Image (tube, rainbow, N blue to C red; front, side):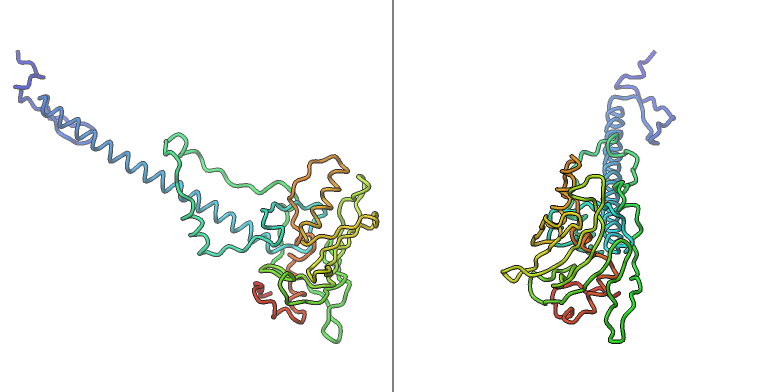
Length: 298
């Protein structure tokens, strides 16, 4: 009886494998069959890599979009804010808030992120996890996109003091359209002053009222001053609002033996990110002369 695996055998099996390829049992046909399988395997491997690449790109797009949503909601601050807010900041936030991200920026963000990870099936096809906000009071708040109504007098000036949630606006001050007294996101009027509650720097069981104001230093630059009602002897004067409030948090946490991290937004604690206060400041004389400030249509 002839050996079916002999090179002289021309027997052909009429069955097919999963790939749909006909084959016989000759050495030549087996080699061809193996080559076809390897080729098919390479094609499937390439398709898998493309699919994993697409999944990775979609994850990055989703992450970038979530960042845009978070930044957008942060810019639209609700005036009724909580007492103990810790908004996560980058180092650049010491001078200004995070710049708004446009749809064009999204493409740039995605293109800049080179996909360098190994596409092994087990690691790349992990279930997508929903990004959750930092579990603090700031993440629980819905920030209002509409300003609160503040009455004006017969001359069109806002009647002050005006209470906006936990913030009391004492004075709007005077706009100086010079470098340093504004940036892309905020205007810092000289004479601007607000009051707001926060943890005491001298009594760990109490909150106190802090007066936040803006003046000028001897170099004709803005100076951000904070005074605590229960500790008038402590003078805090810094060149940025974040530096000033960071000092308050440092002293407050030191009193309570807590680790201090620079996670405070000075403009937010100064009330400058409030949509209502932004509107009020933009109506001051000289606001249109602040070249480079990103005007908000409120």
